Length: 316
Image (cartoon, rainbow, N blue to C red; front, side, top):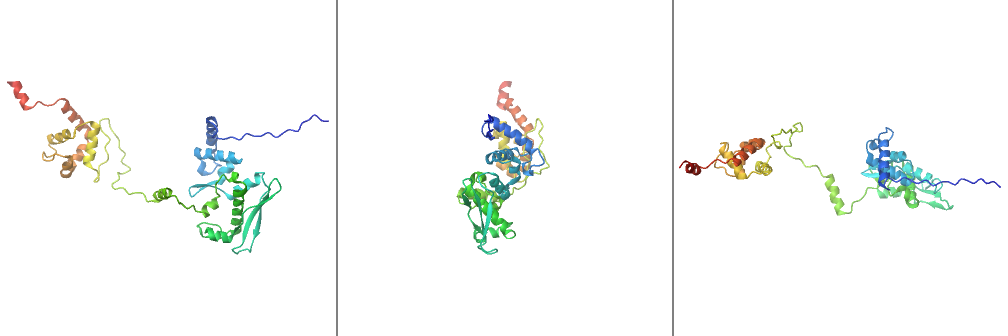
């Protein structure tokens, strides 16, 4: 009697990017290597985040990461498998015999259809739901833009039959993700009013703003110059002035007194709104060169001039 023992297959522990921080870091290093390759699809290049997710999905379905990257698409903003990849995953899963297809009905008629079938490990024959041309017409798949139901109906019948088989008997392989032709054919209907409002907002045209500053005028600030917005006809000068005064901690009355004393603004104009209406260019010029104005006002505040009464009292 031989003492040799039959080697037992060892279970391979699958790698999960989200199992612990060290695994996540390792996944990022792997993703960085993949994204630097010219073999991966363009959408994954220099895109570490999507590549980490692709690695995790490959791990969960037991597939090659590169195969997942090459067969996972974004259609209408949603991830989707290619039908060929989903069929290959079913055939390679070891749960069933390779998929077979049974065509039914009259070729070219509404009853022309197909269902996919396979035999599981217990020997039971499993048949997926039947799909017909009548189903495609009723669901509106034939009228979708870019749909291949009109040009390649038999291929589409087989693809959809395989997809429905996977939904029913191997949902762990699809991970709840539709195929690319499903996403194109089956447009999701938004019933949630909140989601509908967000969708409407996302598709609304961008608002047009008046008098946007030219892109070529980059603002550069010197050490004695405050960052002031490029003036335009739509600038609210009183609001701009009050903003500058708030930053500089200067009272509005002191600022207006300064404008009167420098002779640039008439004494009869006692509010910023009046000055902006009657002498807007003077107010704009002062705001544009506010740093020297700020220094002058603060210097006057620190060294106030004596009043005439005080001067007369000292001379007595």
